[in-house]
Image (cartoon, rainbow, N blue to C red; front, top):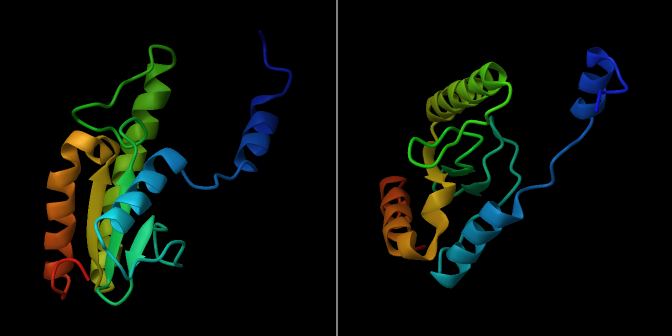
Length: 144
């Protein structure tokens, strides 16, 4: 079915749509923090790149990256239609991730990126250990 709007109008309409978080990934991460006793984290702090979770006292920013949108080397897929668009879109997302990480580090923050696939039950132990190490290296003692 053909689009009823021009490309410019479609772009304007789509630009007005704002996300409200991602329950499947961010919700699982928040649950993992609670279940394993991680405290001191906050959401929606005004920092570059808008981290999903922030441990302000430790200056640790945590991003939960979707395997599709951020081009996971293990689970990222490429749609069959309009491949050049999607390839450029995902490449730009990855570049922006690098830029945001570098900017946060310049501001004195430690950055931890977690892939969506790491939030599965079978990867939970490894992820919890990784979080604890990140908190220790950010100036703490494992689980706060």
